[in-house]
Length: 445
Ligand code: NDP
Image (cartoon, rainbow, N blue to C red):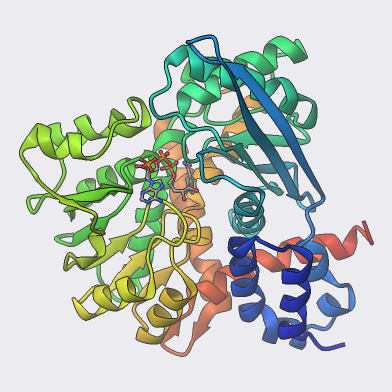
């Protein structure tokens, strides 16, 4: 039985209407897998892709809470448990007004491949709510998190599903959710990752995603005999991933000249470092303040309503959200001499952008490969919790570097085409094989 991409996508679209991001994520994967599946017919015969696009379970629930004025607010919560073939469901929680079921299904689907690439035993899932943390007091955030966990707790567990943070969910939100889980379940277990240090969190977890993106970029550059030293990097997000990515670029001798949010970006030709970076780190993740505050504080140029991809650079790192880099942006980057794009956000680039980047043959890593450091260290947090033991920063960082290097090698194993490495193809096939083989071994479940 040969695999027909057009027919497959027609079915996916018909069964999942109104979920364009999910369609986009699935299509990218199946297009790059088609030849491999046709060469290995067991995957088509066992309907592996048909099974992989169907979540094992989705829960959707009401999240009522009371704001500081005493008014009742109602949000919608979700958990998408996509695939548990190689381990408990694992993936972040996103709190953002843009969250829909379709967004979380795309993220959960990507997560399955990413988690497999890390080599750790983690299945894929994702969840969240359409909650907007901007302008909310600490008590409001706590009440929301408690209400969210009051339903979610019955669907998760250390051997079942282990959520973490994502957009809008940082250390504070994870801590409030952990507290409520512990209170209801009456047990202290590693049911969330990204926890505070004093209650089971791993060193290097906050840094892991941003650091990992740069370790991956470093590995890509090394294939060309190049490094980060002296490079100019353009970055978009000012959250968890973006700020620690800036820190790692600085440590490796490069400079990051931009940081943004949905309303514009700040341009700093000298590079964001020292006191400036320390001010930036909590600006969004703790205080939920706009990036313009950063420009105002240090007298930097703020470019309202524009995107950082117009700034000439050697390396570009999208670290904000999905589809933040479109075809025109990609062409501008390439025209201006960009040699490497390493994605920090999930599905950072539109299909048009990915096609333009692949055609240019510059170095390019999709988020599911280069941002896997976050979930990898979450996996290491689970291991430490199980052992009731903590590794040092150096130990965790060394393991993170090794994992990013292994993911890079896997991408090359499946993505090398002569002199060029197609990391999109490499990540998709490399992530797929382990999950698919486990699914076949476990029978039709
Ligand atoms: P944060 O909430 O810490 O930061 C997100 C940043 O991006 C904020 O500055 C936010 O500003 C900005 N942003 C959000 N939406 C948009 C938009 N539509 N346009 C421009 N900027 C936007 O999230 P993270 O840093 O944790 O996550 C960033 C990306 O990295 C996401 O795609 C996430 O899925 C991915 N990722 C995160 C991991 C992690 O460990 N945290 C792991 C792997 C991937 P504002 O909210 O004002 O819109």
